[in-house]
Length: 381
Image 1: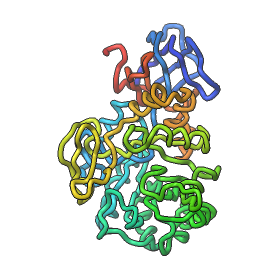
Image 2: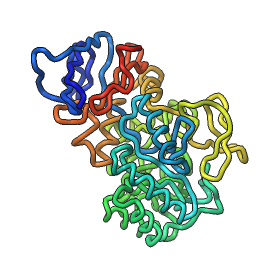
Image 3: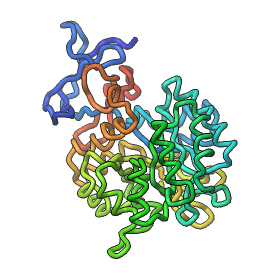
Image 4: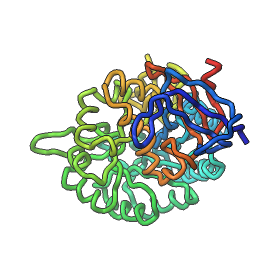
């Protein structure tokens, strides 16, 4: 059990707003409402204190893949992202054969049961070959509800999200199946029309997988899925704010139309996040990472990202000029609510896990705490 501590003097971002010179009390693994008089105090004056980040969509980091790595490698990837403020991460897979994905679900579900990850996101194989991105086309398949159910069952209650091209045969029935089992149905890697997307939302889809990417562009006569996903209050839109996947104007468009309570910043990170340039495998496909941008060796499609959420935070505030409270919502509260975990994470409130991030005045990461223990100690630099 971590010792009690008081974090004092920072600008603390709470659900009710920003508190200047605030304090957060940590008692063991939890945030507490009060502290004994002799509890040690850490002075964080001149810093920001925000909730730990929650990443809904992450394929790996630190040179390790969540899709193909060993247990030790997956844990290394998780730790890499913790060093950058992500205290809750959902492990995402990429398209593969069904038996391999089911086997991977078994391994990842054990890590979820241990609390190392927050669950599993299956991105593929139920996606459109027209919008496949960095997925192997020969392994794609229509979303047969029986096969979707196979993956859910293999995850032993730890499946959190499945990305689907809902216009494909079996798509709407699969959305209904996922909703019945409490699994997020996410619309992505899709070639759907506006009308087909509306139908999928009515069937129970609640997330847009990396909005704008791997879907038809917005048109004034054929508005496509982007319009339907932005206008419907039931949808949370994922955004990759790395300066590569989205033009700043597209990011502003999403925030303006969806509102801050319907945006979730994600990394869509692959192995190279926190590791460096070079050659990698994403599923069966070879990826070249150059100057931090990942692209398929064959074809040149963007292949995930090397983003970490601390960089997404800093960019959102300093480049995109978004209010800090809105960025905190997009990085913490909104994804936590989607996961059904807001009672434990996503805000700095008594009773919740002591997951938090310390940022300096320029919003660079200086400290990370997970469940009361410093992962990055702000006092050690």
